[in-house]
Image 1 (cartoon, rainbow, N blue to C red):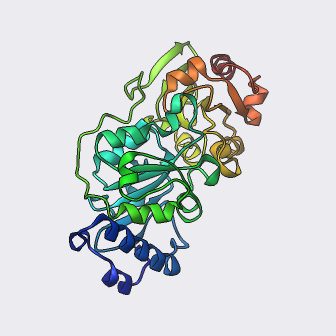
Image 2: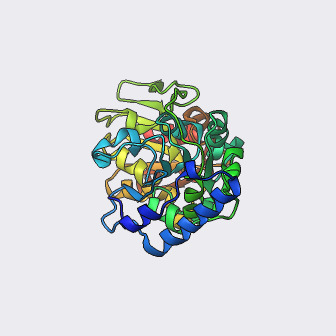
Length: 332
């Protein structure tokens, strides 16, 4: 899957031969310039790929950080190591960063997803800092959500922690250059990190309203559900992008509500609504500023609907409606 030539690998500069930080930054910048002249993600990119492999480690690019632990069919023999930098097009929250951080990468880059209420869209940067891991996130409108190619090849850093700054990452730097800078960071380590579960439900599905014909459930992530649930409405924590629709189709609920992630480039933060509409599944989004992305209970209690697909609208869901009312409307 690695796409750069062996010549580049031979020319890669190992950290153990770099004594001064300035020399490390200069060498990494030279490697970045060489790589960008040669490299690209493969045309058959299927959600996860190694962009480059150097003597210092690999740069792994993914449409979703969840793929690193939940979609091992996509990962194949690829596994994250302590030498790797991971660029994943998920929101940079505590929940989404927890699992990849536990794998021990030397650096991590995600998507700001609107930043949103209580800065929940980038809360993972502080958590990464607590573990000594450099981490950053792109600007919300600079990259498509759930699109690793867009995040990595086109867009710019908008948020970063102190460890990333120490590694040479700067605001307005391209994500690609930032990833190469992170290859000069200290090697990572496998660690225990708090669960990727929502802050209120502990990763479990919580029944908020139960009836004879179905109920309203709160779930941090629809991928937690392993069976069809055609009678239940789910209020979930992440964005409404492509990967949300992908996981929802496996469950086929009565309806689903998630977060609009600040819409993102090309409205990719809510593109999952249209995908589910084509499959006949009612779906809606709460605004990122109204509810904390990554917190399903905040979605239910605080969220205000910003977007709804045709099936949800037909059941009375509309922008400006409290999420609690929208969930009840989808249950009818």
